[in-house]
Image (cartoon, rainbow, N blue to C red):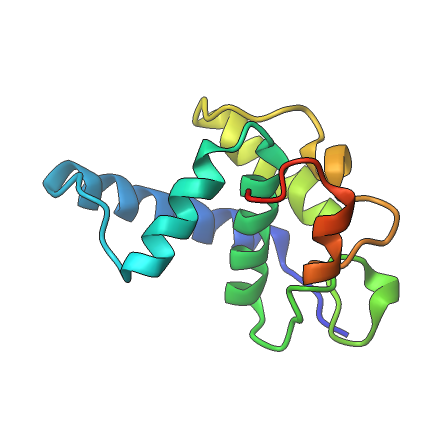
Length: 131
């Protein structure tokens, strides 16, 4: 069962953010595969902050342990699941607030609750399906 070291996750997120800020100062144009840039444009246009915060949590979870199934953010979902709520509460949300990036107090619970998994089926239960 994967276990995330939250101190290490915090440090890695800060390190990545610092690098991203430096890259943005050098070249503010979006870089990467056009499909990814288009998808991120949709995601960041959404009013639902939980989407962005859950995505950031998935990215950090995967960086911490590539054996984690990022589609399974609740520990009871299987041997490769992770605790997305705790990751959000201890790492992601405080990071966003510290850097004054718009975030609610507990966004992971705002939309992704009741043992949800991050699969195509999840779209049925959310209002912003494009995001």
